[in-house]
Length: 116
Image 1 (cartoon, rainbow, N blue to C red):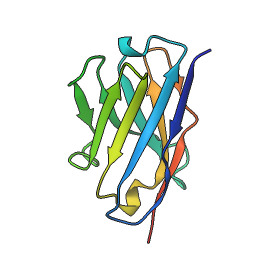
Image 2 (image 1 turned 30 degrees about the vertical axis):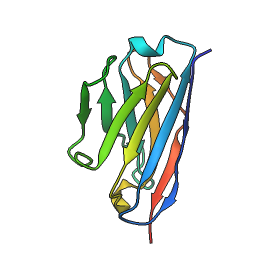
Image 3 (image 1 turned 180 degrees about the vertical axis):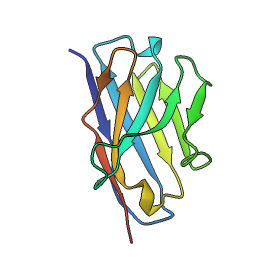
């Protein structure tokens, strides 16, 4: 059974930091690119792609809205995906999902709330 389990969300003040994790199982994690996608509350079904990391170490891409503030990484030995989020803004408030889109696997998400 494929599982993607996100953790690390919570309430943080503007300018603060959080590190999200996504534990993967049930597929060969190291063979696939992985992504973070978010959906903000009150925006209905609108999804926003955040970042993607390639199979190997080094190939990363980011949405303009998070570039320079967020860093995606992975540990293939631990089957875990990360998202380091710095200088958080209220507009970053959303449920964050990790996804392996090649086979359409998605986690259930973790809520990040940025508010003073």
